[in-house]
Length: 160
Image (cartoon, rainbow, N blue to C red):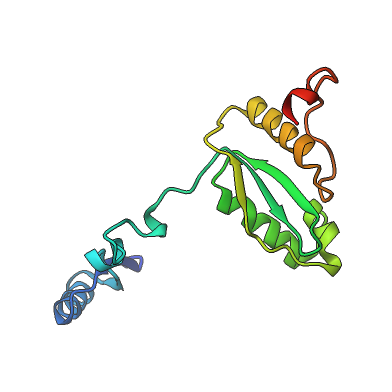
């Protein structure tokens, strides 16, 4: 007698037909099935006929800016989709670790997370870091720990 490893698959839910298929898979092949919600026109489109926000690609390679309720601000950069970097900041806040300059600042404040994207689609690391440094120089955010890349003293007046 051969024992099989339990095997689970996910199938689209189509009413009672899905339950029949699930039962047959279990009886005939010892396969457990779970149901998933399939894509529908309603899932994919807003009332305007445009793609929903979840379908739009997240910007990556960005330099971004956010403000605290005390009006201090922060400028950051990431090569990944912005939502991933923001989740890391929020996790650092929740865990109270010092991986993020924002955590050190907001012990008595609150970041509003209204993010302004200053630059996007900057895949080259050094260019993105240079742009971050230029925005730090221009905005002068109080929350940042450093000024980013060092820029020659001859150049700052060109960007203010």
